[in-house]
Image (cartoon, rainbow, N blue to C red; front, side, top):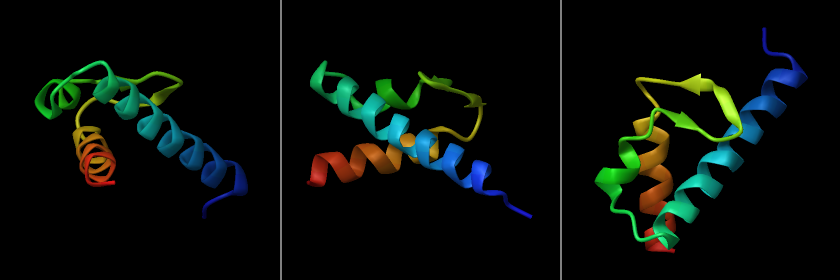
Length: 65
């Protein structure tokens, strides 16, 4: 069962993903370069394989917007 703390931690993780990807776009990084990240600053508990999916989604959303 999810606890409120778990939901808040995931919310913070998603904010960190958006912030990280936005900063990388501003720095001129390509999507491929951004997808190579293995950890999101501020959210070390979510790392490794699998983070390319939220990174890619954030990139696509930020570029489209």
